[in-house]
Amino acid sequence: MAEPIDFSATRGLEECMDGPCSYEELRDCLRHLAWLNQLTRAHRPVLQWVERVADSQSGRDRPLRIVDVGCGYGDMLRSIERWASQRGVAVELVGADVNANAVRVAREASPATSRITWVHATCAFARKLPTPIW
Image 1 (cartoon, helix red, strand yellow):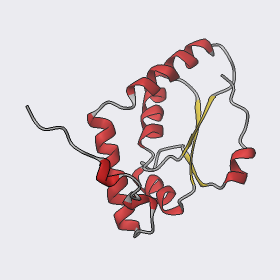
Image 2: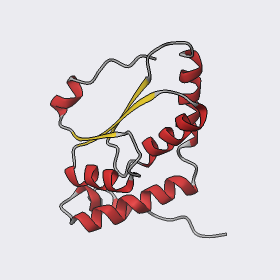
Image 3: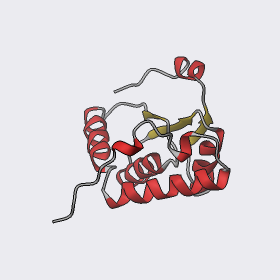
């Protein structure tokens, strides 16, 4: 059996993507996190929740609005967009991040046909978001 990993030496250290780093470093870090999300099926619980919400809203004439605050690479919203497209569920998706380069990465990683709105957000932005309709 493998020895347990001791993470105590990393306590208090800043993650590379949280500090000053180049666009390329951030993009690569976010790509790796997206790969890890896919590998671990991290999106599955959120997609199951979205499905329950969509089912409870069926018959309404308004789209389901979802805002991903701290969207990073945007892989969660792209997963939701694919899910909604396959099921004919109307959605309005917004990805917001305080890091302008993260927004750029998410936008560039999205297909041209994507209808996700990517925004560089501040705390003031969050106060102006529309009220969720679930």
